[in-house]
Amino acid sequence: MELLVIAVIVIAAWFIFKKVGPGKGVTTITSEQAKAKFNERDVQFIDVRTPGEYKGQKVKQFKNMPLHQLSKRSKELDPNKEVVVICQSGMRSSKACGELKRQGFNSVYNVRGGMNMWK
Image (cartoon, rainbow, N blue to C red; front, top):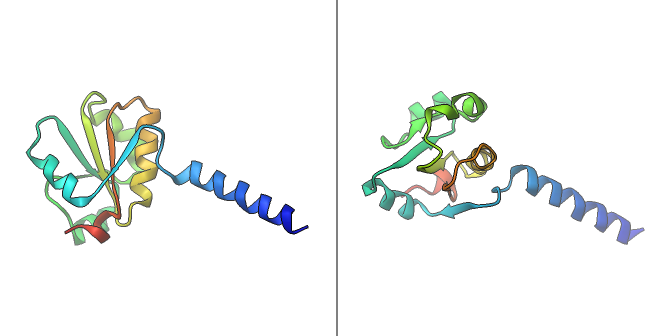
């Protein structure tokens, strides 16, 4: 019985990770690494938090593109350029990165810890 419970927990955790974890080909970077990309050309920065969260605390290089609008608004981005994605904690940006990879974006970076870890 205990083995069955453990198996169910492991399978559930795997499904949750696949749903919200970073997609294949997504690179996780620190806030310092994201800042270093500010000097690079052809890098797109998006913040997938809500407009209210973005207004309260924002980094000017990041364009606000809330997660729930991403699938419709991703055509505003160039899939051949790097995309750096941030949110509050790193969870929504991870999901956004997976969505961008599924849409054919080549280089996608998730900022670890999001705005909570921004220094």
